[in-house]
Length: 213
Ligand code: DX5
Ligand code: ZN
Image (cartoon, rainbow, N blue to C red):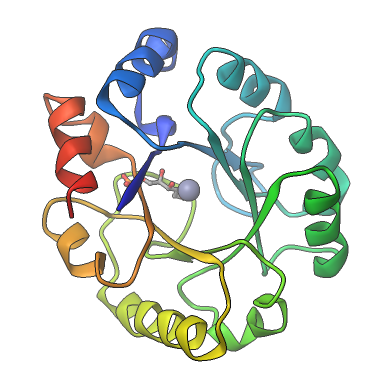
């Protein structure tokens, strides 16, 4: 599996050093959790800080927008050096326009949904997205417990992709650790991980563990 470390679980003032460590550890992406205090009950950072973070590493970016109005801010986030830009189906705005805009700017478009939202909501967009992110916690904070009820969704999204011949990648985000990662591995291409990677004592070992699954 590819690994996308969620840097909100790190010490921000040490980020430059942490980015170097992540490069050495073979992290595949940097997961940028953007929260606006409206869509979720937490606030992280916006496009300027995201851009500055990504200027300090060669690792590809994986932006996760947890914001109420992605259409309004999408152009600002498309200026950030990042490979994927993922937004929530529960947010406002015209989803086709957001996806088209991301692609027009040469980035890959991802769509995601909260644990309580059924897969049928994103079904109309599956033929045009590059990534589907399955949330296995309610978004807003790192360090939450993996929701077992998300399994059905993971199995189903893989089944839909395989049966319809879609080519999006499947990513999972929330509560991924040494117990839950092996369970999701058969269904996903990319795992996001925050506290498991950063709150242990060795970033490199934890990334290697996830990568070999
Ligand atoms: C939650 C964020 C996640 C989170 C992951 O709202 O989208 O990316 O930081 O952290 P862990 O792995 O600790 O659940
Ligand atoms: Zn995330």
